[in-house]
Image (cartoon, rainbow, N blue to C red):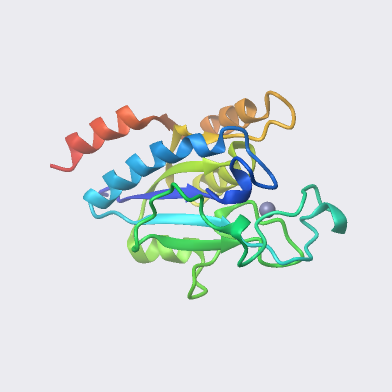
Length: 202
Ligand SMILES: [Zn+2]
């Protein structure tokens, strides 16, 4: 079966970047790379998905309500907007997650688009078989999304130059990366992807 690829950009939002309320160190450094990946996927007319944390004010995801995290990415606030440098095209499909007060929703497979369709239904509609994944944070939303994708039978390319981790413990992202690779994700970077697309899509 022919592979059909899509780009998945995980949670590139103001609150996770410099100046935000839950900063992923160097998170914004993924943006120039992600913009380059976006251009490739646009050029080959392949779908681009962008997920966002989209939390209500009260959720068990936040510290005040028993969760792990400071308040971040509240629905319809500046902190929840995509980082200003990220050049998401009009046709990008936005997926919101963490909208329920009772769940963390680290995985994009728990997200829905603006019409209420979940990610897996969208992937089926588009006939996608392989996801190219970048974004934030490596050991949370990227990891859980990648592991779910593999579990559901999708191939995954992990865009090593376009992910960053929180590293509550220093080795956290490295461990998460090893886990994703062990489960079947394949490491890639911009050079590899550009070469691959130039070869395949002629
Ligand atoms: Zn969150």
